[in-house]
View (tube, rainbow, N blue to C red):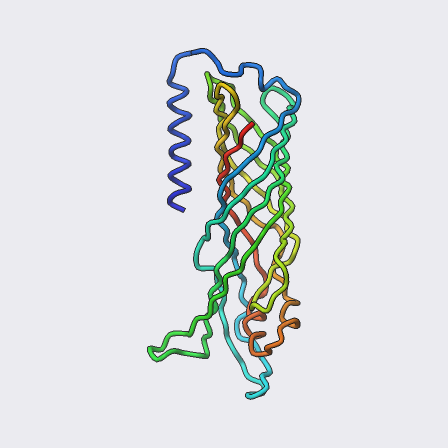
Length: 248
């Protein structure tokens, strides 16, 4: 998180320095007049998921019978990942454009399960972890609002929606996410006009609009003792920070 905020500060300083400069020769002065242009992107992402826990639950275990158990699940850290994609930009007018950026996001979410009925020697709940690996295919559709170009800088803001397809297969881990999700996203960036192409650093935040938790996964677990961990979660909302470099 500190690195992301540092990137934002550096981006803001760069834009401010550009605004303080005098007029000079512009690189690629007519590139923004094209009705459509394309590019590629690389970047990094930071994934997280917010779990809503069930609380105490009545479970039936082979060796114990019916008993009440309380397990809490949480993602305790933002995990870094890698992103790659392409971009298509349709010019609407001088300041607005419609942008589609099909991308793939490789990453993971680290889940921690705390069993409140199974305490360690020092009296704290025993913890069980799961590294939930995710590979998303996203097709964000954003509206991009750009400021007036000054010299070779042009800051912008964007907002839109992003359908997400989770390619991670089924396994015998405790928790699993549904294969489809929809995220709303907002962000900011700056067009940097270089002599031969545009370099565009951008940061955006994505938040899931749907319940992404696959509750039916409990019935697919062969070990019935694991189902108490799966059933401990009622719903989940995915979120993600994405820092991207576009080359257009």
